[in-house]
Amino acid sequence: MSPELDSAPDHERLLVIVTGSGRSGTSTVTGSLKMLGSYIPQPEIPANDANPRGYFEPIWTVEFQKRVLADAGVRTLDARPEAYDLMQPTCAKPAFRDELRTWFGTQLKGDQIVVKDPRSFWLRNLWVPTATDLGLDTVFLTMLRHPAEVVGSRDMHYLKNADDDRRLARETGNLGGWVNVALTNERVGRESRRAFVHYTDMIGDWRAAMIDAGDKLGLTYDADLTSDAHHPIDDFIDSSLHRSQLGFDDLDVPQQLVEIAETVWNNLDALSRDPQDTAAMKSNDEMAEAYRQMHTYSVALTQDHTNYSVDVARAQARRRVTRELQQQAAAAPPSLPRRVVRKARSLAGRRAGR
Image 1 (cartoon, one colour):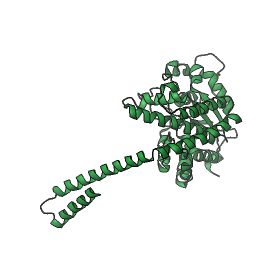
Image 2: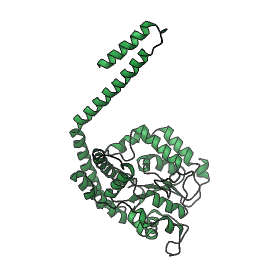
Image 3: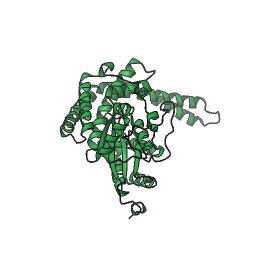
Image 4: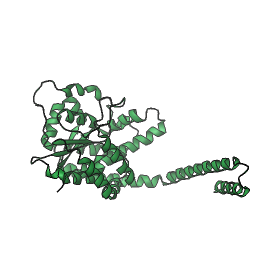
């Protein structure tokens, strides 16, 4: 038995994984959990101009999860229905499992350890077995924010200077990513205790939101949330954080995708009241199939465009390589044997003719 398990206390210890699409309030709820006595593995990503109140994300976790996703070829907001399946061979790699266990074993410094990173749900089959091995139960807290607001917030944050074509492509892609991430996140969390918390509830009445989440997840806090006494979270959260208040009418996205997203949103709203609402889960499974079909047809429809874009990129790369080889041949010193120069020029000519 490992030293970590030998020293584990008799009472329950929890790994609280905070998930949710980026720009959905994950920093707000994680910061609140920290202020209520939970432990966040150190060091954390420091606050910056984009998030002056702080991210509350362990640096090690973010860097590790980026590497795991890169190994699987999956993006944080991946819109491909097969993305979660693509993650599984990577999550099963002993090297990644050993690395996570070694690091996480040094972070057992509280009864409630909070790991927040929008990528974490992709690595569910890495985190849960690791936590179990170390004597922790894993619970999931998912932040909910209307998809139009998530997409709009990402627009304001990442696409300030984008042209109309770029904005159109990213709004559609980001909404597709929201749908796929929301459906995947909901599905993979069904076997664990979980809570869905609306961002607007955190902003409007954080005490009530945290009491409800605590009841569903079995969390304990170091403050009496039934009291109106001032708490540092009162200064941490304010209504001005809710800057992007948009609807689907504010986005230029396909109506079929809007209908799927709206249904998924309504299902998540139902799950925020009852995390095991069978009707909502059944509807989400149906939406997952509808989204998969839509994605398949969309990929097929754009095949010619994709092939053309690949051909253009290859041609540009060939021209760049040809220029570099020609420049190297022209700059060859006089002492360089003529056969070497001729070979370089011949190679450049052949590449230019491809």
